Each structure stands twice: as C-alpha cells, then as structure tokens.
Length: 114
Length: 115
Image (cartoon, rainbow over all chains, first blue to last red; front, side, top):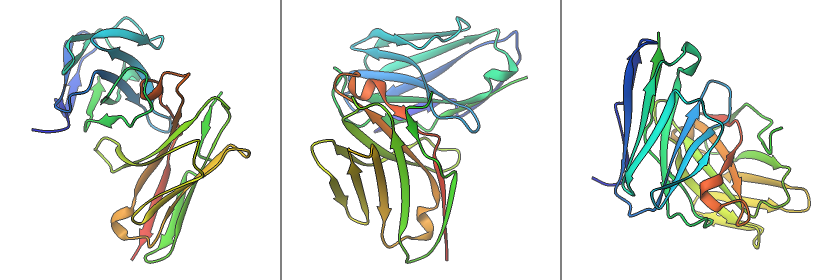
C-alpha cells in the first residue's frame, strides 16, 4: 500500500462512547497531522507531530487526544464528544522539519456524533 | 481573521474553456503556496505549488500565477474537463511559519465544468 490510509472511513458514535481514528503513511515522511473539516469552513489544523514529537496543538479540546507511536502511525482518540464535533477528520503527512513541501492527505473519516 | 481567502465559493465553466480560480492572502511572510483538489468523500489531492521566488509554475493543463505585490495567486486550468469538477483549495505557508506543518487553507471554490 502506498500513500496515506485512514480507518475507519465512516464512524457514528454516541456522546458517551470512546473510539479511535487511525492513520498510516507509507511515504517515509516524518511529520503527520490531524485536520478537521466542517461544512463551509476552511480546513482546521488540530495537531502536528514532527519526528514523533507533538509540535502543535491548535487549542483543541481535551476530548480529542492524539497519539503518535512512530513516524508512520497516528491515532486520534475520541471520548465524550459533542454533536458539533461531527465533521470530516483528515490525516496528512509531509517530509517534516519545517520544510516548504506538499502535504499528502488521507481520504478522511466522516464522523457523526449522535 | 482569515489569512487565505477564496472569495468565490463556486465557479461554473464550459468544457474546453479556461477555468480561473483566485486566492488572496494577507500574511506577507508566506512564501510557499499550494493548490489542492478535493472530490466529495475524499481527502484533498495536491495539484501544484509555487515558491515566492517564481511568478509562474506550470504542470500540464494547470498553471499557477503568483503576484506578490498584490498578495494574489490564481490557478488556471486549460482546457477544462468535466473530471476537473471538484472543490479547489488554496493553501499557504512559509519557511518562517513552519513549512508544510503550518499550511493555512482557504475555504475552497467549487468548480463545475459542464459538458
């Protein structure tokens, strides 16, 4: 497999549930991120990991908890979410190190909180 | 306040004609700009980029123009094809901002190419 792969593609969860989103990249990149895309809004950067270290937390509520066990895998742990958290969650990766390069995106997880 | 603005939410063009998508930015420290294309239910796909040392970059049917003094860039698609129908996102960053780890996106422009 190549590129950036996200699972699951769709997720429906209740407000009391705990679930995790998974992202895997096979591009040899050193930076991985989570973005949130809500309707009619720009992509919002949530978290950045550079060489497995979290370098950005864009004021994200603690009900979202990222984990980066190695440079190829990234998780987003979800608990006690709110209906307004329903959105498309996108994982991306890039070379890292603050370089001006393109980021490659996964296909996203469409999350619905009920 | 939005640092990257795509003021046209939608654009409709005829197959074979030119599509011009526009993007404005406010941060003068941005020195690297990208365009992404997104189909429904998929993630954005990288299309083309341009560094601020250039004013034009071309890749097949896609050309990006950068006007630094006006803080404006545009994506030209010639000739437009129905398969180009998608949402196009402009993004910007800079070496001082943190490069690709700090991409700032516009809201997107939905392009429809009619057969």
